[in-house]
Amino acid sequence: AMATATIAATQVAQARDPEPLETDEAVGVLIDLTRCSGCNSCALACKVANRMPAPETVPVKLDCDALSYVQECQVADGETVFVKRQCMQCLHPGCVSACTVGALRKTPEGPVVYDADKCIGCRYCQYACPFGVPTYEWNNPLGLIAKCQMCVKRLGAGEMPACVGACPNGALRFGKRHELLAQAHGEIATNPGNYIDHVYGEHEAGGTSMLYLSAVPFVELGFPTLGGQTVP
Image (cartoon, rainbow, N blue to C red; front, side):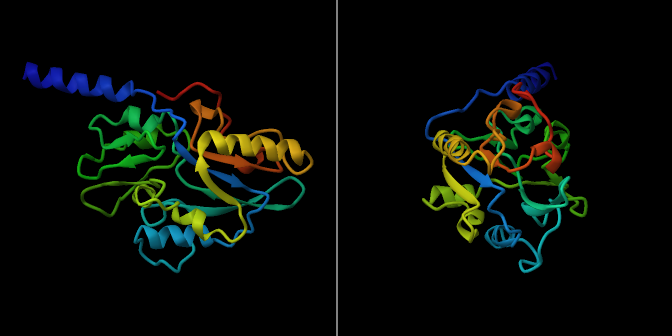
């Protein structure tokens, strides 16, 4: 019993204090909300790539049958802004730090991946995520979690995430995270009238691999206001 308790305590300590995995090779996605038309091509491509039910039905929220969706946000001037939502792939993920069984793991390449075989359905990851991303399979007796994994298998085959490849407007850009940040700041400097001076995800919660550009403040679009402190 003492040996088991020692092993469990060690696992919890390791889970709560994950080593940062930031490298120049880590990838991400830059989402330019000024280019998004709300066509939902990205969300539908995600359902097909992940073999989700009803692949032709446009999702309206994150759940176990939809790892991404496009939200319609009404801003102060009455304009509609379309916002793609999915896992933010944090650099220092709260979900990974909260998982006591190692079912969630941050990879050096960028994605935060999930191993259903290890999951015990405790839902600690849901409480730990500042973006409210992981969803729970309430109708599954095993009680598993669902979240976007940035098409990690496609990345391993040298392909880009399905959502990026499906976007017809260039609103989604895939590449090395540090290069995407440079491009984002270049866009802001070149077109200051088109963007607010803020790349969401550069510093929030210690940084994320999903980065956003917008013409309106992110708080008006329902993004949580977070400092640079990491969740773990």
